[in-house]
Length: 263
Image (spheres, rainbow, N blue to C red):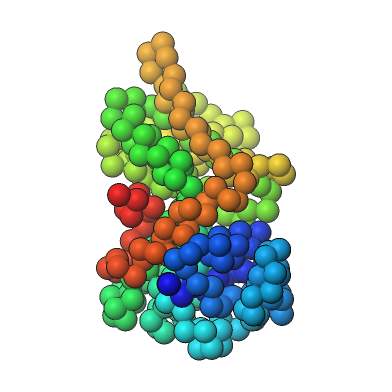
């Protein structure tokens, strides 16, 4: 049994993680933390009391519960500090919160090595989303004109999404950077053409009703190719989260991307 604590336990993703961990026979929920603490974690997710009370102080929960893994689905402005605290106590973060800067990721990598505590980050824990990114990288070898549209719920704080940025990074591995569209085009409204990453465009949609969705559109002579993934509910992420909890302690340093541990 791998001992797991959940940071951001009372949020929508946090509650889904609590339920998934409790129901997984290879994982043991030993701790939970959230600013809105006080509830019994099992009761919070409709599984009955299990004695794990949601605390409000991360370090206190770590000290009291001695977890091996901390799953973090919190906020971009606190995830880095949470990860640092966990690593320094020998607890491996499994991070689903997006918004970490490249500098913060580099610092976590160094801290991971210094404390001999592996760290795992996934821009997206849905296995289908990982396959979408891998397929997009393959397609970009042959159809380098590409745009990304990502659609999320209106409570999401960062844009573009981590999945969109990771998709663009993977495409850039096989696609030479170049400007797309008419070189003389002008935006009548600033931002109309979306974010520019190596010449490809990323568009972010934020509306109620969405969970997490992305399509990668490739254009060629007389044809288009669209690769799309839809997460219809938060349960879609849970197999990937549980897989990361089971594998993170056997990794080395900082590992980014579910594709690195799927095989």
